[in-house]
Image (tube, rainbow, N blue to C red):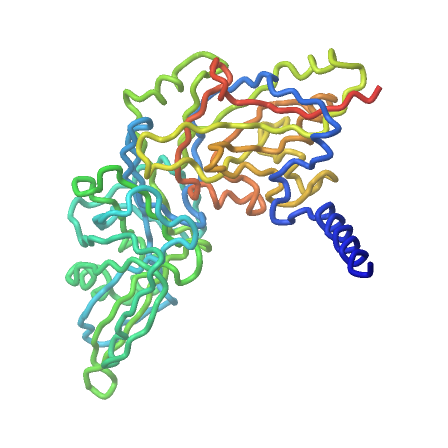
Length: 466
């Protein structure tokens, strides 16, 4: 009898635990069962979708710089090059008496997140010298569409596999048999004569400030060698933002004060965060593609949507029939609203769909503003990530929680001056668009003008409070 009572108690405790479990790691991703039980559902509310080209985006002061050559059957060819301007480690830099170069290496740490997109095959990077200056004493903003001028002579080439997960063992200069392990990085040896002529041979006046140095040296342009690129191509992202992550290391000998030969090394930093001296140059050839056809269409409701990262495209949304919900009853309450995008399977399997969709709206002045659901100043804000939008590879869907926004539109508490879905993040870094070039990838959807069952949907859970 006592055992039976214990068993019954255990069952009751288990039921209470299961009832109370909320899975905090899934906040915002699953629907509260109470909403399903106590709501009616509309999943046929029309959404108008217009595909438009992304405006010019900031290409420096970004968390990463991106090196790409992507050949996409649907989207055409995308090329991104990296522009770098090494600066002096200090004013009045000196290389000593009679410096003789041993080696110079351009070091780029791989990005810590999503460093590779596309083929994982062998790539070849070429390095050219710029003919225009990047660095300015007063930091300058550059945009992705800017074309940078450079000398045709190649000063370095390196074939490599994007080993972004593998640390390296490198030998310390000047220390026999001394080896140190470093984080995953790409190391590109530069031409010795080029470094000697353009850095070690500079006079003291040119080496007195970083501005004078970069006015002379200009900078470097990195590009993928297209002739030897793998079939689909790909994108490799590097950390050019954090201090010391990207730099030019110079190893040399000189004559010391005692008249003896000595060794030294110096590191010329890339100040991506402080001075914006790392820039991604983006070129997109979409000639003859379906994307170009949809972008040129005058329709306000595209039937096919081609969403592309790296400053490619975005989707403008409109919800023309929210007022019709009032026909369902005089006192409708919206419990939850979701935007659902279903992605097509890519023709080229390595060119996977975008990792996450973002959403924002314009304010009265046509400036980006978060939806109430993602606005920390709104009382309905549930924390970063609650809005969702991450790709579900099993269902092939993106679900974006827009409950607060649809509530406000329905009740006419706000006006839709324009709403956009994009791969870019405008708000995760205090309004600083540092993630603008992190959104590598592409996705294809059936748009609002499609007759397909997989077209973009606005799914609304509502109650009639009469």
